Image (cartoon, rainbow, N blue to C red; front, top):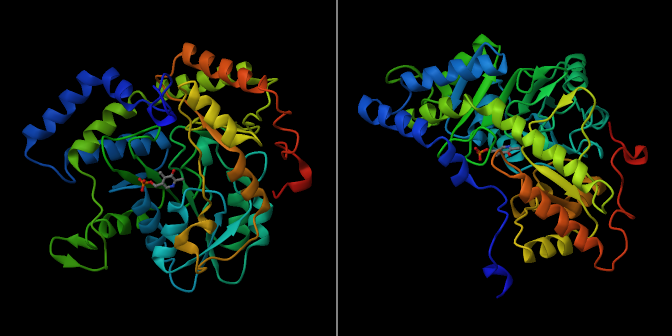
Length: 394
Ligand SMILES: *Cc1c(COP(=O)(O)O)cnc(C)c1O
């Protein structure tokens, strides 16, 4: 049997298991919408927006069509566009950069802190220019960025902060929810996220009344009153089915996150003393464990080995934004990015999710131990260890 056809015994993330667990609640929610006759921006959307704002701890939640629109429309609502620069992490999903580019502003990329993998406040400060309008930290893998330092920096320089919280539903920094620190936070409810819809969905949370009001217009053709268009808005509305589904899933988010946290703890124990470098949780951080990424200098060989054992893994992300065709002609500021390059070459995401079992963790552990026994030297010998101060950027 060739590799592609080898049976998967430990899936990376099994969304069928998640939906199965909520089968009855989801059916009730969906058929309630079907019978209601209202399908876009109705009562279900309002209910979800209120519940999510209260969960995050902000005054407002404005739902939109997806995470990219949440980012783009937030920047637009803040008045960021042509001639502006926005500081972004070099290592993130490309959506963070594309949102800045779509407004006409320029992404200014900075190296991550090698311990947290998140944007380092010192590196961000060094990237500030007279054109800088905002900072866009990403809570990568569900590990909250150092929002205390970032907000302090932004305040000192008069910059807006937009959190990319697409991977951080439920994470906390100094006891406060991710998504409640910046002027606004952008969320994605793509099905694989910790809070995932059964399709595309997104939202912005904010305490800023004016910003929320502008976002409500921007998501609906720039319209505040039917058929009057004060702004060049988008069509990025949440539909009632996704809102009803999200309300159901929000009710189990904390419990499902604590299961993820337990799986992360099992991995920490099972894999300590192996060749792979484990994630480091910063003091004051409570991660949402969206992704459990280990690091190995023999990443590709390790991934192939796990695949042979039926264990599905992923790489987040195989190609950095600055190496994508989309930015081949430039369009960003910054670089070279040796830390980000190294991380992109070493990251491997292990299966994690609310429905992962202890037995599956055990299979992963056994396969990683077996890989170490396969005769090659220690994988972490040449790697930059988490917390290595020689490369610290923040
Ligand atoms: C998923 C994700 C997005 C984009 O969300 P979509 O809903 O897919 O548009 C943005 N930023 C990060 C960090 C993400 O993980």
